[in-house]
Image 1 (cartoon, rainbow, N blue to C red):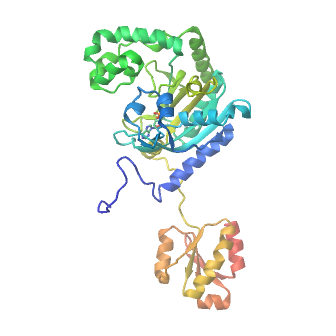
Image 2 (cartoon, rainbow, N blue to C red):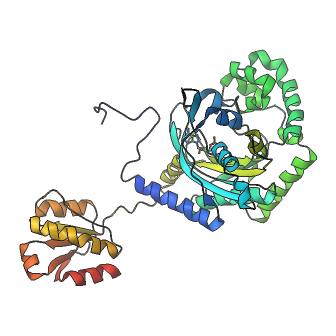
Image 3 (cartoon, rainbow, N blue to C red):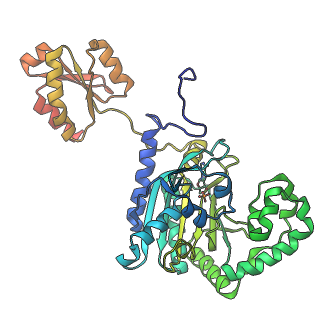
Amino acid sequence: MSSSKFQTLHGMVDILPGESEKWNWLESVIRETAREFHFSEIRTPVMEPTELIARGVGQLTDIVSKEMFGFSRGETNYVLRPEGTAPVARAYVQHRLDQRGGAQKLFYIGPMFRAERPQKGRQRQFHQFGAELMGTDSPLADVEVIRFMMRVYEKIGLANITLMLNSVGDPESRAAYKTALQAYFRPHLSKLSEVSQTRFEQNPMRILDSKEAEDQPYLADAPLITDYLNGHCREHFAQVKNLLTNEGISFTENPRLVRGLDYYTKTAFELVSPDVGSQDALGGGGRYDLLVEEIGGAPTPAVGFACGMERLMLACEALGIQIGGDAALDVYLVCRGTEAQRWAMHAMPAIRKTGQSCTMDFSGKSIKAQLKDANRQQTRFAVIVGEQELADQKFTFRDMHQSTEEALPFEEILSRLATA
Ligand code: AMP
């Protein structure tokens, strides 16, 4: 493997046969859940204007300041999207999706790009599924998107997950909190990491998200946002908690939860799993009532989530949850000679119409090699065709699992396959 001249880029992986079946299955669970919740899919380009992401996600976040894959061409600055919400908000404004009436319920599945240091559960190209409910500030919407997210994990059988919940307030609450944080960090400022020092003036909340060792001793006693929420945010938070409790969704309040993106207001949440190692966040989200306005749209309160698909797979692996991936073949046409191959080529569409997957050998292997190939693909039925079978118009229909076979006319084979 390592002898090949070209390799995937650092932190980027190929999804190979055997794995891709799992991905397809996972995507089908997400799509089916979206259908049940009546969210429509939105597909945005993988590249966006840098300015959109910088404004949306926040200039001082790790994502924008350190992790962007960007380049310029002519006058335009491009970035490979690091997340899905700012692009969806852009599309919402650009295409006036509000005019479709009512709150918009959107979901997406796709690759995201962040130039992070790769490790288990952390890649430079990774995949997220996410949903956005745009155009309402109701706490009901917060709970509905949380319920959508949890439902996907529930369907997959991942029960060992914790929903962490916080409110990060609105600009008024945050202004009061910012003053309190600055008062708290000021005496320690010279001992904080360089990056935290740069965040101190403009966005001290980001210091709370710091992973730098120097900062850790000062984080535990920092003031909590929940003590600075104004009446409106406090009321919203209380309603979200109340609704979650009523709906039987358990959560853990974590007043230290600040997310890595600046657009969140009020509700913020994260889904964590003890089964995926140090990168334990499976997903997260929250309310972002000011993002649409920030990027040039009309005021549009909204709430959403994004979940990492690689981490979901890792959690399944750790817990021994078998996901999807029935790659077994239904029918293999074993051919002796070119006439038989021609017949098989013509027979395959009829077999596929019965709903069974079907293939043949294209390279003229021996019968023995073809049967071996069929076994390797865990094939259920083999249809063996040679000169004699063609002359008799009866073909050997072998049940590979039972090791039984019969000589049958093709029509009979088709009717057996249709009910198999
Ligand atoms: P975020 O958009 O930062 O809120 O991330 C949402 C989720 O995406 C995280 O909880 C992870 O599951 C996943 N995620 C984020 N960054 C990465 C990454 N570099 N590699 C793999 N998964 C990631």
